[in-house]
Image (tube, rainbow, N blue to C red; front, side):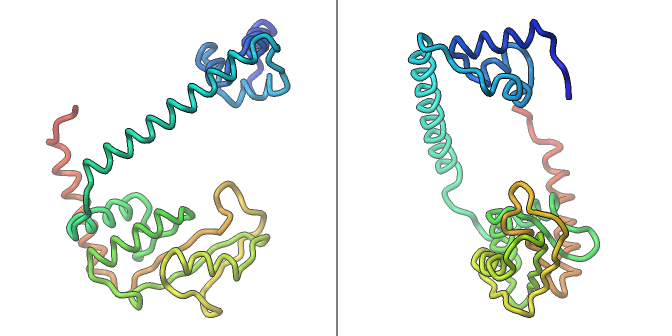
Length: 212
């Protein structure tokens, strides 16, 4: 844990008292936000600066909301639909980043990523539910039945008592409140080779793409 000089700590305190936000202090002093928070989390903003701080906070929140709206509009303009070919690319790129290299399996704790991978794989390669085996890895303080129910909903594949659930020692960490979901595809040797070929082509085609 890095220690800062008394002068630097005093600057943090004074900036906070005069209504500066943690990100502002971090940028101005070139100090990680976590370090700023650790040193001044109990420092109160002086009453005469509180309204100024509140106005800036509201403005920042409004700017964030407006930027999110603009980003959504831009995204919807660029992507109006996803074709079968694009589903193949999505599944291939996700597998490229997160998939195993030996057997055809993919494990992740992000529900949206797992669902997107499964849907893209099903559509792009015309796979039915019986081609998939779902297993879970959860920490010992999690409820097995609740986790199975959660991933059943996410994957669209019914998980029951026969589902393999590996219990990990310790407590849940970060985003692992439902554990991790592993997706395996049966008889997928040819599909896996095709995906490796697709990712090679993607890499080849993007080498000549202009950098904006």
